[in-house]
Amino acid sequence: MILAPCPFGSLPTARSKHHAELGLFTINFATILAKYSLEIGARMLFIKSLIFNVVFYIHMIMWLVVCIIALPFPKAMTRWVMVSWAHQVPYLLKWICNIEIEARGLHNIPDRKLLVACNHQSFLEIILLAKYLKFPIMLFKVSLGRIPAFGWALYKLRFIPIVRGGRAKTIKFIVKESKSRILHNGQVMIFPEGTRVAPGEVVKLKQGVIAIYEALHLDCLPVAQNSGLFWARNSFMRYPGKVIIDFMPVIDKDLEREKFTEQLHSTMMTKKVALEQESFRATNPPPAAKTAKWLEAAKHQTIIIKDGQVKIDGVITKVD
Image (cartoon, rainbow, N blue to C red):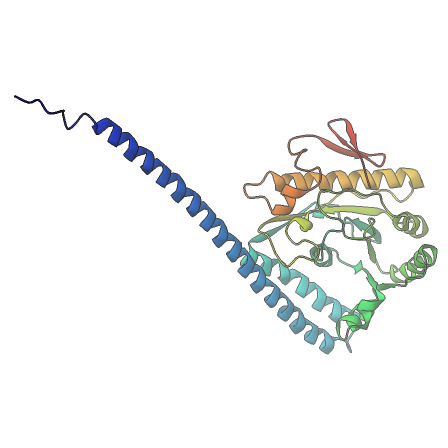
């Protein structure tokens, strides 16, 4: 009798090989699926951003036509057009891009003459300030005033054109024009940083806001927001999430220069960073929140802006 080897002797080896191949296939399939899902998500984000930008500019042109019709009438009519447009933009952001707008501290906005100081990240905060302030007086570049319809509306609303001609000359002009426009509870808006600043960055305040504060002798309303995470400067994309604009208690008009500067910078920038951190901790944070200079490292840390310095858990970080 010849004993043949058991045909089942090699079965465990065959099963192990089969399981290994199955596991490798599962991993590859999961990787491909994840990559494909990311590609679909990126495409959908682009499509939504495209739709929003097209709708946004068509919507703005339509309201500019209404604005032209309103120009011969009293200023209140033109202002109604501006405020109506500003109220509708958040709905477009919500419906198309899934961007929510949350306004905090609205009870801190007094119904009187005021200097409003807000950090600057994008075009969106200008729209939001126009929506929430009762009598906004904005500063704008002279070049914007040359745009048909849009420029006419800016002058009709008695906004202040910024004349470039040296810092001292510009500040003097702004102060002069502001005094003539705040007679009826006007609220002068200014961006103390002087330009749009990317999320995660903290810069020193320009001297203009200090000079205007002293010259106008008005209480100052500090405002912080995080719009740059979702509507970035010179970016086509609109990322989903929550834009938060926070109106904080007013700063008294009688403070000395150094005290006012320190309090405004500390109050506004500390809140700005806190809002950015809040967005970073969200379930699906926008890309800008992940790439901010020092924000990621400070995700779960305490950040305090004081005396012109940023302190993360007591360690001083450079301020540009």
